[in-house]
Length: 156
Length: 418
Ligand SMILES: Cc1ncc(COP(=O)(O)O)c(C=O)c1O
Image 1 (cartoon, each protein chain N blue to C red):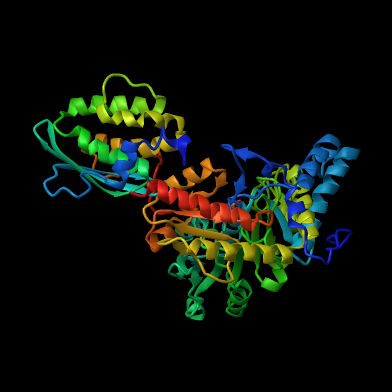
Image 2: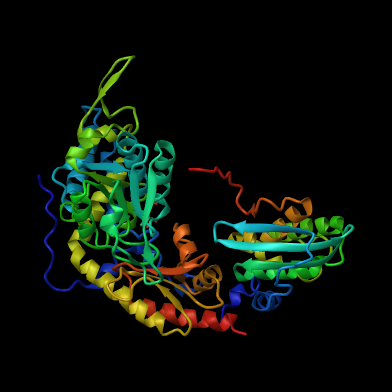
């Protein structure tokens, strides 16, 4: 029906956006961050429970398009059991994948995002959860991370 | 006013199919499907007569205005001023001096907020706007309020139905210096009773500004009938070129309003210490203006009047109501704005399909929609949505294009169904 878009909306992505995994708050979370895409109003909150250096649990809540939801869902599945350094390396690979289409090494199921780079308007959707993840790991939970490098001025 | 009476309208209903042929851009395929352009509230397409006017201006008449004594400069000046006269007729201003050319609606609002607002609005004064304003008729007032200590108040929108709650208008007008509101909501399709609202505001001595961005190209807009002090519009939404627009200001009020930008064209005498400036519209037009924009805008107004704005309005309304009716047949769809008496645009949400996914899939079938907050973030927030999808029509659209939209939406639902 929309065959030209099957690269973008792969079956795995459709599955995760219709039935997002780990889609709940995480009462035992040790770190947390918010992601915001002001262009489409997408909001998500990402929760992580770390023990030492290892992510034991990850979950998210929020609203967004199919790509951003699937991305968050697959992220929470993929980071479990990994260290901060491993997850950072994963972020770098995913970032390269969704912006250039190049896959450097193994990213497991996340390879389904290989088609995103051909749709520049959707790169932000795919990367939103990952920005929230790096912010959470850096402990920048107080300020929502934004897909726009804006300069919020209070007041006006 | 000299020479620019609108062309007489033919009495019969216009041949809309023939009119559509005036728009070369519409005749193309997108992703292998005929283009169905339903993003007219963002910008309209341009008829050949406007494109020809722009080309002719640059091929034969281009020079700077108000400066030269040579032939081309005279022609450019005459063309620029003829556009002002034409706009005065189009909007029924009392004189061309009440028409200031701008870069568009946004610049018009900012001009009023800065020039008039900073002189006449003070600490504690009320600025009343509505909850459905486009960011361009909200943010400048927030900035003015922050600068002057004025207070911003809102006329509420009543839920998804999208009508203004005017029950407390009289009460809300007390202590207010300025009322600024949109004629037609770009996200709800609501048509506000601006004449009645302005009459009440006038009774209370409140200055009024009407945002006609969505109405000026879609129905007759008569500043005297509306009775507003200021009115703003954008050429690009009414068949004219981009980056151009107009601000109407009632003569007496413009007299009292200081200039906006300083520079060439707006002055009478300049010494190193100080300057004096022109009166009327020229006081607000510093620097070399957009001459070609004025010429294109002139051609666009001629074009619209040739079809007839009453007819455009009726056609718009028919398309809007047809779309509303057809879309409401989709189970679970959430429609925004009034069912009847609406403008030619419909905002909607399908359950479980995000507006961005929807717009992208529709594009694959040649249907151009808008998805997002439509520069109405606070309103979206109030309605409890992040974004909506919007189909907005113009006179070159057809009911069969709306049928295509509905078919495509059904397919999009199947695509995302479990
Ligand atoms: C109701 C309304 N007001 C103002 C604007 C701003 O117009 P412009 O961007 O041409 O200045 C728009 C355009 O989107 C609009 O729909």
